Image 1 (cartoon, rainbow, N blue to C red):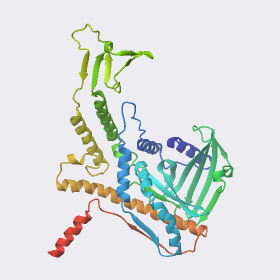
Image 2 (image 1 turned 90 degrees about the vertical axis):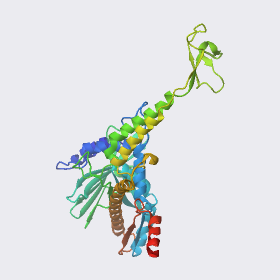
Image 3 (image 1 turned 135 degrees about the vertical axis):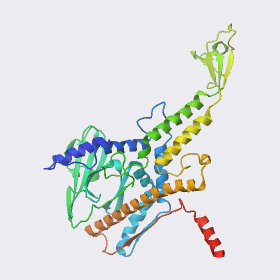
Image 4 (image 1 turned 90 degrees about the horizontal axis):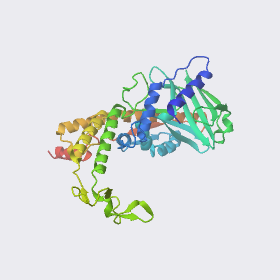
Length: 425
């Protein structure tokens, strides 16, 4: 689905069903940014073409930060029979969390949304380009949002909008289904039960005594320089978009340098035989058609040889140095330690400078871990909420524990050796 277009459809539908004007918390400017971050992550940035290739930096940046954030993450729910019930789907979710945190880091946010099935509770990961927040409270907590899901069957496109609205302690969840034959419109509304995949969903359910929306929202804890009034998270590479574009240009220049300076042999056409099957083609030595380049050189011409070797020097060193310098700028703007993307052998810095760059990376990772922990805590509370609503298991107190790794700046082996030395002294 096109994220910006879908936001317009949702805003129109919400206002059609409301007596008052509803303004989306997700602005058009922010929607365009999320769409751009998503396209960059998929190697479909607007600047890429046949001359400008991608060196896949957005995915590499998001992947590295997600790896550092979830490295050796340990979390469990304990304390009662309710905790044992919640632990099973929670552990299954943790097995896949790194991959989805990567999506969240790339697009600025991620929703952990539990839902009830015949087998129990399952957890759905909803990426930032399928999640449309409508309103937030004064503390930055979501009070209303819409989730969009699409199915394609033949020439028909079915869209489901799941609206969560919290007013006071009253939670209202509604489902609306639409059918269309084109992406340019949401189409006409149809009964939710008319789509087999959604036939068991209720049109509307209302719960009372609810303190917060039943899902966890993880957002990257960076200030949004593109839309300073937006309460949404932004991509981990949001501050390096132009730098990444320039890096792709330089990478493409390096690729072209190798292609343009490829060794070749210029040979007179008169020295090659015509292809008997196609007179417009020449017959080259077996397997050497890439090496030879025929030229229209007459045999009587004396100032040009019949065979001339083309093998100029490749300017690899200056081009790679420029590309490496660009990678360092990207590392700094994405709070990555030097040598994460750039050549670590070219990082000529003092021990204190290396520690400082690692500390910058550690700060981002630590803040992101806290944001992820808040989202997972809300997810556990949401799972507990559905357990109580549907009487899935006996009520009981529980406790969620989290353990994060700090090996970015702390070398466990060196710390252990230092402790042994101190004890010996």
